[in-house]
Length: 555
Image 1 (spheres, rainbow, N blue to C red):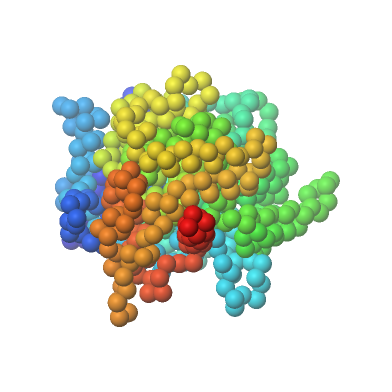
Image 2 (cartoon, helix red, strand yellow):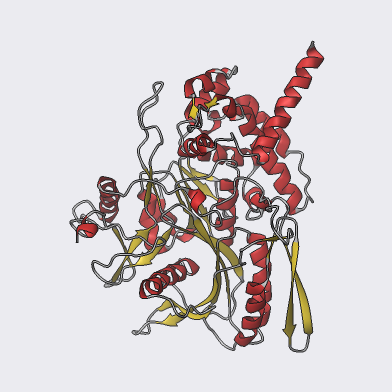
């Protein structure tokens, strides 16, 4: 009971039907604490920041988690009921405010789990690997599940249920089995975020999207989902195929789904041998290919080639989706809001559009990582998350637009039939970035060709925004001082005062207060040998050499 009383349980209730409520608890709630908590150089102390991206259904009152994926946050007073006098939405806001009093603090060192942590740059194969073309110890996926819509007992609605799982987990301890069950329930929720609003269909356009499950230590697992109409005659509900993997590579898993879908049209039994071959195959290193042999009746043995992009840190990104929905100038406004960690909601009809655009926006921040709430597709039952007081990147289906109006700092409409792109603006987005650097980003983006490949587009876009960070904060390494083997110390004041441009210095003074910059610097301070030799460091050196050459020419 003492352990239970140290946590704060928050239940978000959403009306599923006129007479029925079900309660869900946010999982993976965590507070990230600043390395240096004192006020410095006139900057106010930042509050701890909440992050959550996966959910679970509460099954027993007082039940406590044993693993690190799903974490109940329970308190002395149990769940907080909605405030009927102030209305459901006001009550939800109070529930979010109540979180602050008793959250667990701290952040586990990501370096303890190198396989699940997201890389800061392109993956480098260790020299000791016997097969340099492959990533040692990595599986393509943890498991594949098929989620089907089944009628409820009353027969008036549908609910998602897992009808197939590969591989089956046998021989697990009781607590491991319980944790897996909680994870699988979360998966069903994200595969069908619309809730119970379904009816049998005769036609359904197949769609692919992704979501993220966040561990309590900050590491993430990716969920890749394809929804389609199963084979058969007459009206029937769609079903979803979901692959859970610690690997972020949307394009590669989309191709895997093509093969799964092809086999499903023949027989469910055809999926197993293909996934078994895939699970046994070594995961390729960036730029390499693995070949899977698979037999299909009437077609014979096929060889499926799966290739990873050379720029592995962009393999989960499709910038084409972002620029199909937004103009260059609009992308710049979204980037400006994201770089200052504001609350941003994206609206769209298609689930694939939401997930691809949100991942693309997060990728624009490289080498920094979005540290806050990140839900590419918000399930209807969790829609009150939009009232969270902390930064977030959220994807919301357009049919729920009326429930999220006036709840964010920036609301972006991605749908084809939109009347205007920005449903809500704070108003200062155009003045956040230094004007000269804004112009340079736009000029770089205009160099891309209309018929460019996905790889070419990713290169042009990523380099445009990476160069922005090189020019604004690329001199950070000179202001991290290491003494006698102790962790480095970042000299913040000297760092921003070294910037000559007044507009750039004004931006940087704001940016260094963000959680993403703070954690980036913390990791640098812990590296005794100095900054990692990643692509960001490489671009910094190239830029510094260019400045030296230009200066020499002038003289």
